[in-house]
Length: 628
Image (cartoon, rainbow, N blue to C red; front, side):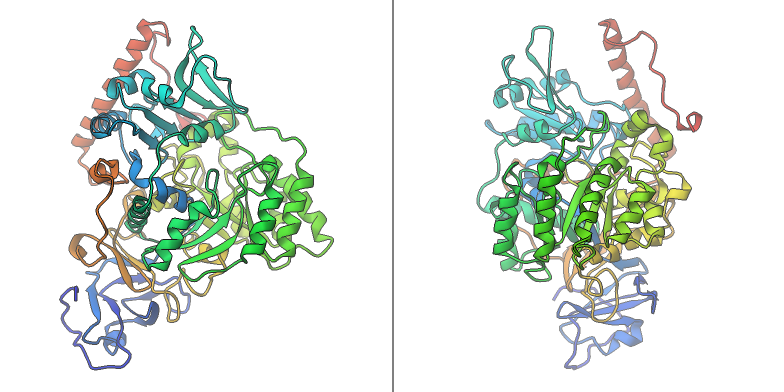
């Protein structure tokens, strides 16, 4: 038995011995009846005692794992209410993650090293979780830099929902030529000679980006399971114990769901997943939904893997694309088919979620719901919600509340806040999204990341955004009146997420009878300086009483995983999220690192100026202090 030696708790012969006891902790329970505690016991996956050493003493048997939290903060396990976890797991070990990388210089060095070990026929792909604004250089890599780093290996670098940069080898692998037509809603940037330059633009549809990425090689067989297990372990690293999978493009049911189903049957999931189903083919959405309704029902499954409804698209024509570098898309009439889809779901007891960035889309959707409400279909007890909702209006929030809806917000503006400000101005950005207005109306508001192809999957970056209103580039987007305190933000990542999957009272809080899902944190979330919230990780993550992640003093207490495969995987060499020090980094060293990056950026600017590609004078910087 792996455990930590703990004095003062003597094993007793007992019929109700706990499987796990964690003591000497600063426990935030989320339970208003007992908000604080020092010890917790879990048996058969469920919490049996929350209290102090005396309360858990009777639960300690000879086989009980007893862990000393060493006075650290312990919280309920986090629940990402909008995460593309299934798709992310199937691709995780193939991706070079720039999440958390502080400079483009470091990112390119990682890319160059990875290209050298990537075998012929495979790609180097950087897919989401980063923004140019997080780099000290404040820019994207150039095609020339990708060609220099990987002259023969295809490289695909995705930047948000806005663009992708491909090197020469990737253009050849994708088959893009001067004769390739631009797809609808996308642009293949071409040079003076008509040949593709390597830049792809979402204009405004991201389908050109994702359809190009879909041409890359995929994992097969057991590698898909191994990749998913390592991705779930990476999520556990940050204290995540649950997620609601929002489906998404190029995630077909049931084929792409088979890996998590097989892992669930084998008892090898380390994260609870409630999943949605997303019709993939325009024109046959109603047929797909009808077939799925005949196959399964909401909440089919168990506490590890369960169906949560349809979405985040019901019909492709109703989708609005959130590329804030482009104007808001204009939709043709879509209400007739959309109404058929919503009616079908509501009449059969299915919940749903809707991707909706703009209030213009939300108002049109609500008009359909209000029409069906006259027939008694709203509110009808089915869980339904809007995702994202960056520009939702106060009037629309009132209508959502009246129809029994909920909200799920993500920190997309952590990564796209600067683009949003440039297009819509700081005034509009201050309320994007209007989180406080949602909460004041009594709406359930879950929080998530929308990882992995835009935001990072690190939930602490999202919690930092909720509390501070700052982007990863340190721009203040949301003012104090539209921020939330730390307890509210945590509740959005725990209790609210449970409510969105119909599991309130079972998870999201720590009290007897709830799932034994918890995390012991590297720093105290409630007391660290605000900038350091984004640097928090879990030292010990427990799901259903199982220790699924352990590091530091607890290393070796978690379950063993098979090695990352294939061996050349970027994850095998770099890991996932690239953690950086918090404010404890010395000022001298921090200045040195930033100076190196700024110097390189200035060299790049001079190179462009000599070729007439940019003005001779240095570019002015955007300073929010002078724009409010």
